[in-house]
View 1 (tube, rainbow, N blue to C red):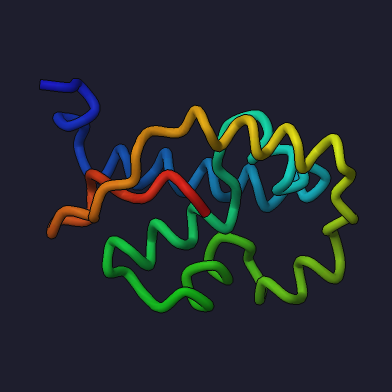
View 2: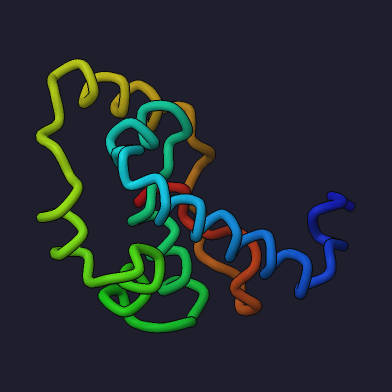
Length: 113
């Protein structure tokens, strides 16, 4: 069994909230750069909440951004360069295959945002 599966839900939730707060603070870290490096971004986190059955897409993304997504984009998002788009496309090829979410919402979530 993967050790992640035995992680206490309260501990996992605390770590997730810390990650989200860190990303809210680091508005300079652009989603396109996160996608290029790790194959996921703020939108993905919101979508994974939606897929887990937590809430609708707009509310889930607002939960991650700390404001409506459109507001965050207007305040912080910059235009993606061709190089950033190429890095993202390459990075996405290394993501695991997308599987339907399991009923408990904790495993098999989409790796694409």
